[in-house]
Length: 90
Image 1 (cartoon, rainbow, N blue to C red):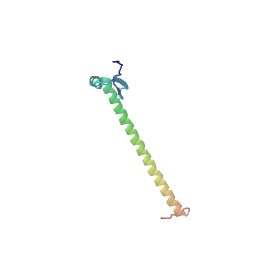
Image 2: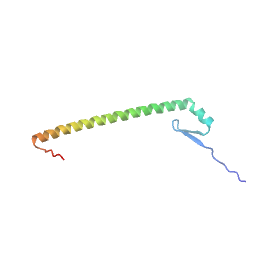
Image 3: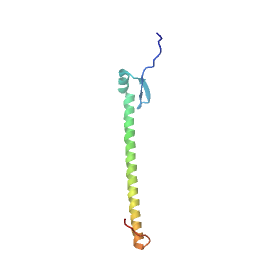
C-alpha cells in the first residue's frame, strides 16, 4: 500500500493574524495567551470606536437632512406667498 503525506488541519486566528494547529490543546493554549487576549481587547476597542463614529455620522447626516428640509419648506412657503410658485394638491 502506498503511503502519502496528509496535511494537518490549521486554524487562522483573525484577532492575532496567525496560523496554528487545529487541535484542542493548541487552540486552548493560544486562546489563553496574553497576545491573544490583548488582540481581542484591541479588536473590541476598535469595533466600539468604529460603531461610535458611524452613529455620530448618521446623526449628523439626519440633522443636516432635517435642516435642508426645513429650509426648503420655508422657501417654498415664501415662494407660494409671493406668487412665484403654486401648490397643487393631489
